[in-house]
Image 1 (cartoon, rainbow, N blue to C red):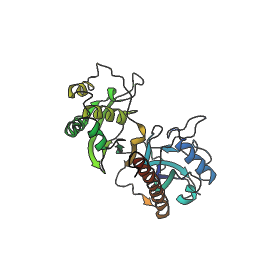
Image 2: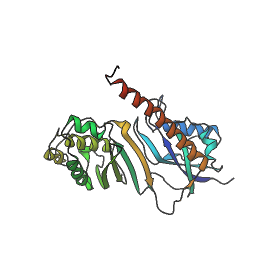
Image 3: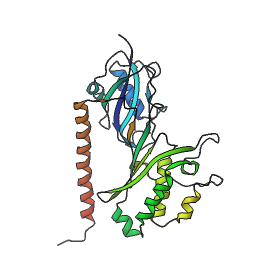
Image 4: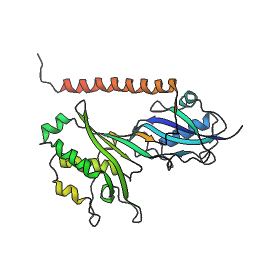
Length: 281
């Protein structure tokens, strides 16, 4: 049969057992799970000969709603067949055929990430004079073309650190702050480092002038990024000619898993909330 390249959307939850998305020797990763499933169901022999390629890489504990990868095969993908070989934290849910030389990483128009702040807005307001308006102002400051070297993990000196940030938005959902970042490409830890400094600004740990100094590439700043567990690779946008076909059963599998996890953690949240009460009557 003729070889074809397919582009697939998939989700994953950044559990502790996964050491990020990118393949690593001696560590379990998201990519390794995908490659093993494709190999087990005879879609590929190995990653290299199949041209297996993931559009974006994420660190440990980061999750994804619509990550994307592509590979070459002679067998039309049956998503639930592949899903049967994947752990419940990972699942394919849509696909499309693309040209044999299609590169999912470089053909992406932009990547959309969401970041959920772990502490509720009520908690932040209770423990500090939280300034929501100054946070919104800082988000606007980040939009456009900048050198984000002070908002990224220190790396190679020759690495290009100029990025064009399409949009940075913040909203409130069920008492939690949610950031939305859109850009064609991001630097390592860029989103988590931007969030870290924006939140420090909102809680009054730094002044606005301190935040603006981070755009000064003649100075270096060293600090830890925000918690990775709040970060979600929400979507990767391609040209309008790329039209994904959603597999109904696979999408149902994903939604059922999300719902079951929500119910599980809602119970734990209520349990610990009640345990904090002093009412013994």
